[in-house]
Image 1: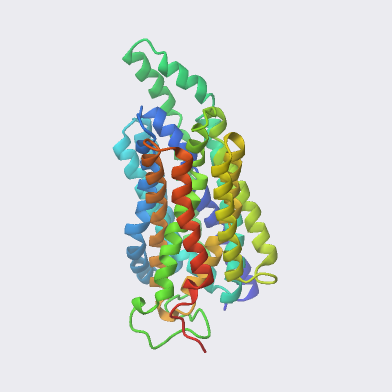
Image 2: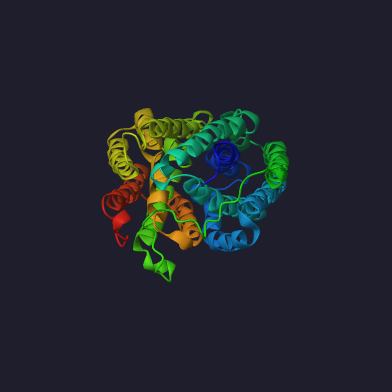
Length: 421
């Protein structure tokens, strides 16, 4: 266990990394609106390839990330993750300016790959840095850093790139010729370049800083995450609660991205102007920030991780039903309120799922990170299905099973197959 001074230093550095996760990740919400206009996409389903490309990287890169970390160690692995993310932001900014959608999506996949490496290292690092029973509290601190950045990033993109988007949509629609329409869209697309180049530079600087920092190594492979950690298991598949937890992460992230990134598209279903919907992601992230503050104050002093997850799942079910039964801004408000319901889910699911893995902690963490691919699948289903069916019912029928399973994991799934002392 690190000394108190080393502990505080480590928490500070990881907190900055989680801020970066949040800023780069949650810019995807308004980015969906950007690509739909900039690339002249005719359906929301095509625009939602933004989330598909970004989150699918976690599925393919999580296990390779664990192998990389076994070679590099945590600190060098985090630095490498920052450098890869910087490469992705540079690629996206460059190709989006050129209005090359295919290569822009590759840039987003590279960003997701870098963040996959960062998350595979940072999440178990935070969980192991102190007692497993208070891991949710530490992850809540990281969540505050993440969600503050998540509130800021859509505002930044909206201010520098999406300002006056309603008028721009009207100009494109009324353009007298294809050449004038292309000129308008080229000028609009070029606005994305500077913000992404600045992000790339900041990521490179942070990567160099982490590399030279005194961040202590934590050997996840040799750290027992609980006094009951099993030492007689020979395979990661012998931990059913981990596999159930990976599915829980998949559904949770899908629900989280639906509430955060799809909320703008949901709002447009009620004919709310784009100049308003571009800010809706920040509302959801505001709800998540409130939830993390509640978690910081209550876990583990008043609530266990498991009880917090039960309450969160029930709240998600209630808010999803309320969103279906209302319309307009009120319905959007309930979708944004899902941020509050979702806030404590990751901080609770992750430590519950890796508890007792012992030497398998790092590989188990990678499997859980693979579950982030839920953000690639579930929102894309929403965007595709809403073209043929009522968007509120599609939202409801996708979200209810997610929260129902999370409730099952909170009540029973997290304990299946765990060793009892």
